[in-house]
Length: 457
Image 1 (tube, rainbow, N blue to C red):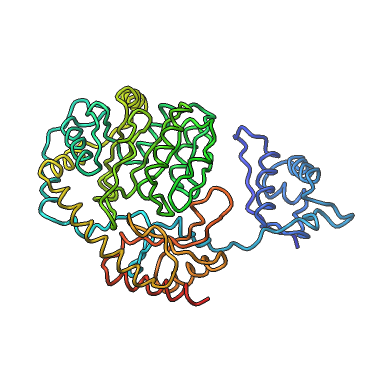
Image 2: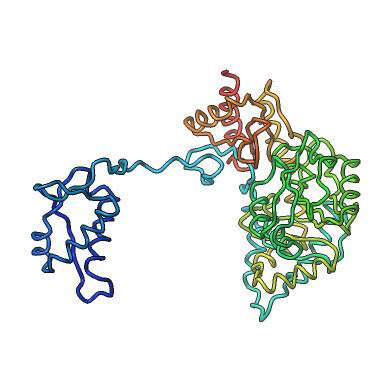
C-alpha cells in the first residue's frame, strides 16, 4: 500500500506545479512523514488525484530521484530510498543552566549573585519620591547628559560616598553601568580594537564590548584583583571592577592601582572602572574610587542597581569633560536616553538625604547577612567576603556541578564560577549572593543546604 499525503497544487501560483510538488514532498521526507522504504503513489494515480497531467508528477519524482530521496523498484513502483534517516523523536526542551535561568520559582531560595535586597524599599520616602517625580511635567527635549538637577546631586553623592570630586560637566546619567560601558565603547572604540576584560569576570561586559566590534582579551586576576603586570601593551581600554572584583571578590590594592594608571598613561589607553559593590565594605570604610587617583585616564561607571534596585534603571558615567561630551554626542546619534521619572525620583532621594540613610541602613543589613553566610559555610574555604553582596566558596572541579544540581533539587539556586570564564576554567567554585534572599532566616537555610552538600564529598 502506498502512503496518503495531503499534497496540493496551485495552478495560479507563480511557481511551476512540479516545483510545488517537489517542495512539499521534500518537506515530508525531511520531517520523517515519509519513512525509508515507504511506497509513493504511482505517478498516474497521483496526477489523477491532483487533477494535473502525469508529466507534472513525473518531473517532481525525477527531481527527487536525482537528489537521492527516491528510488525505483522494477515493476513495483517508487519508494523512499533505504537508508534515509528518520528524524529522532521530539525531545523536551533542555533545562536552562543556572547562569541563564534568572527567575526563581515561588518557594525557591535564590543565592545567585547580582541582585540587591528590595525588601527595605517600601518606605514612605521611596513612595513619596516616585509620586512627586511622576507629577513633573514632561520635557520637550532631554539633555543627553541627563537632568541638570540630578547631575548636581549625583556629583555631590559621589564625593561623599566614594571620596572623589567630579565636575558636573564630566558626569552623564545612564540607564546603568552596562549602558554606560556600551555608550563608552560606541564612542571611543573602533572595530577590531583590543580591550582587556578580567578573567574570570563579568560576562555581560564582555558581551557589550564584543557587540561594539571590539576584541575582548581575557586578563588574569588573583586574590587581589586585576594582575596589571600581565596586561598586553596594545589594549585600547581595560574594564575592571577594583572595589570588589566580580566574581572572585578581590580588592585592588593601592600600589596595583597606581601601576594600572601608569600602564594606561604609558600605552594611551582608558580604564573603565565599574564600581561594583563599591558602597559596601565590612572590614574598613569604603575605599576611594580608582577615578579619584587619575581622572584623566579613568572613566567611572556606577549604578543604583546594587544600592536601590535594578528596576530603577539609573546609573552614571564620569570622566574627562571632553570624553563625556563625545559620549553625549554619540548618545544623541544612537537615540539612547534615560527615563525622566526615575531620574527625578533619584534626585529627590538624594536631595532629601533619603538615599544616604538607605545606604547606611543597607550596609548594616548586608553585613549581618554576610555574617549569616560565613557562619553557615563554616569550615569551607571562602573568598571575597570582606565587601560586596557575594562571596566565593572553593570546591573541587568535579563537585561544583553536582552541588548546583542537588541544591536546586532541594529548592536552592546557586551558581558556579564556570560562566565567568571566557577560556579554560582555572578556579572552580560556587558564587553565593546574599542580596536576593527574602530574609536572613531564608538565607541561613539556603546556605546550610549548600554547606551540607559541599561537605558531603
